[in-house]
Image (cartoon, rainbow, N blue to C red; front, top):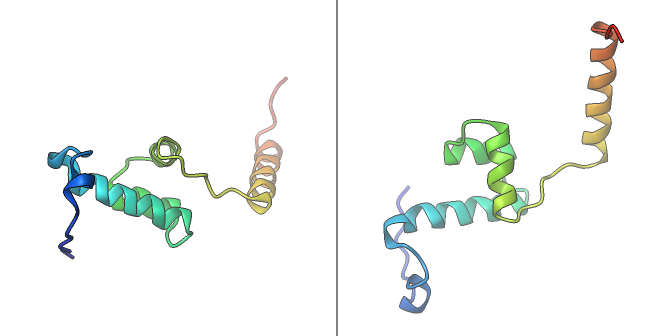
Length: 91
């Protein structure tokens, strides 16, 4: 979708006009992520970021807190526990 915006010169002067489309897209994506309208996977897809680590780095660079709560922590702990059971170390 193409959208036309009227932006004041006072704002535009602070941006590189050659990258304005990308900067607006990135700002909109960060806002959508912070308000939980999109997921980190959607961030990566929309911006063409190659990996979860690239998404995490992008969000960190833009000051967006990662959505990671206690349920996510417990899920990760359970996954680690299952991996240890399936592949015990020799140490």
